[in-house]
Image 1 (cartoon, rainbow over the protein chains, first blue to last red):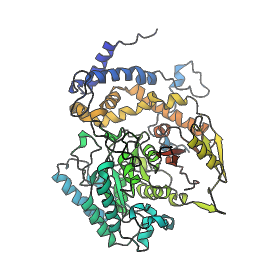
Image 2 (image 1 turned 90 degrees about the vertical axis):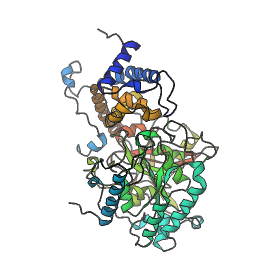
Image 3 (image 1 turned 180 degrees about the vertical axis):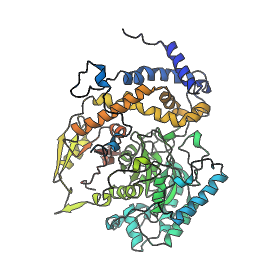
Image 4 (image 1 turned 30 degrees about the vertical axis):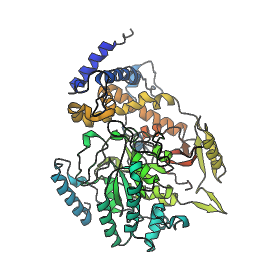
Length: 99
Length: 479
């Protein structure tokens, strides 16, 4: 069953809650869409709009990406996907380990 | 155990004292500062100057200045004074530096004049991007967050350059926290392209803007930059320079203010390939403070690789080289001319290569954004207490804090998938590949070199980028 996409209000709640769980309070930023005259940091409404777009775009795109099933396995079975190559933070350096 | 060089030890001790006085004593132990052997440079690092460059030391490349010093025709103090004079005359417009270390540079030049030259960087004044820690000298990364930060020791690449005899002339203006072209932290343009000083609208390239402008404007002999998303190759291309972004791990990141730790690459911006080779040779190498530098193959002889080979009056490559051309690369007349010139070099062949499978997706903005949690995590204390201190750049740091671990891991798996496709579908067909954007190779940590290929009709430099497989240098490339 398809998941209903979140509304702006739901995303705002989620974003604020997620940031708060990390100890980050968006209310440090100026209210509205006007940038801080001293530091140039954007207003919190502008930031929230950008963050909603980020969640709907990049977070969703990454979450929906399906790695190719390992060679010889049946991609219809999720079990095969548990045997994907291990993630590597430094793929270029890792080529030296894999020669 | 590595022996501690006495000069480095004394310098470090003095720096710690200065830093403690500035309130920076709670920083990581100074014992993590690099103290090792300096590399060896061959005779190819010393080049007899072009006649037109002899009368003005700021016209000399590093290799030419090294030749002049070697043969007693120039002293480090003369070189430093010449550069300081140019800075005094022009930097009010160029705004390449945010700190000029005139007294320190003069003292270092005087000291260098009393010592025997052992490397081509002996007595050579350099510009250092302001995200490299410099002992006892304010290091801001052009951010409100670091505006009063005085590091207790040098970043490893700076320590290595100094150990090779180089002189730190100043710290250069950069994009706030290495994000954009150089502006103030609140987003007002500062540094201009040295080729169009009267027109701030001309892109000078970012974020190593100040280094590029200082070197192109002959206010430093060479300089350092960092690249996370094109920030060495872009300003090099914009200002007629040669920039080297090495393979991840070639140069230590210890002591450099991070942007994205899997993609930050220190490297040189230089007048030409020979100078870039000299700089990278000095900067590269294993560092106990950065495990990413360990276990890589030895650095090839970059000086030799950057020395032109001429046979029967024609420049040639050292070995047969297949240059991959990606779709859409030849979209401008300048690029077409460049490819035609390449095609005319003996033992160079052009090979059309297709983009690997899912190229647009795996190198596109959404997958590139998997880097953002790397920004946020080391900056959490600042995000909790000083969001406005991030200035115009704050949104990227908050985006990173929003990404969940599941998506982050998927993104890391996708990087390996992308690398395997680049190796299998590009580098099976060619040795080096022209780049349509630096970002894919930044994602993967693969080496790139940016260099000039012409000018626009209005006289603005045009450059291009070549990329290679891991740890592979452009060893067959003519200068």
